[in-house]
Amino acid sequence: MTEALLQQLITQYRVPLHIQKHMQKVAAVALYLGQKLNQAGEKVDLILLRQSALLHDVLKLCDFKELDIEHFDQTITAEDIQFWSALMKSCSNIGHTEAAYNMLNDLCEKKLAVIIRKHSTETIITIRGEL
Image (cartoon, rainbow, N blue to C red; front, top):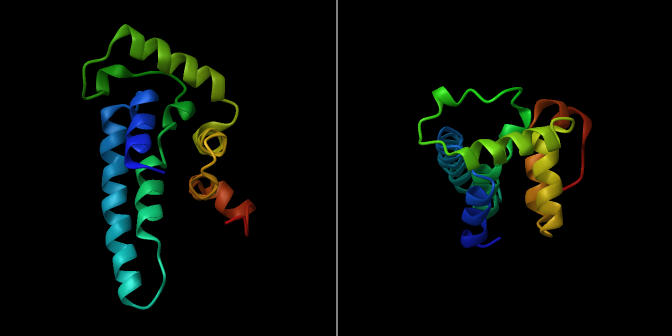
């Protein structure tokens, strides 16, 4: 996936600023750990690691039961609220990991899709050997 497409997805899905900051922190920690693993002789694809960390919660709003925008650290528009409400409604029955998996599969990003699908605890337990 190109950096431009990665950023486009974050913008397209109107990922709230606090979630973007979380994804950036996760990516920083993941890269640090990935580099340490590479130094220890493991083979870690740092580009794939970074991309999956930066997208792991791209559809986190799917899990929200309601929008509590007073805690969002940004200016919220009526279009944001309309988009987020529709997103929450459209994927509330599958959750953010499965929704992101489907979206990335549609973009032919199979490896990213599988990694992101596996980041939820219940999926880690039930899905094996897909990557």
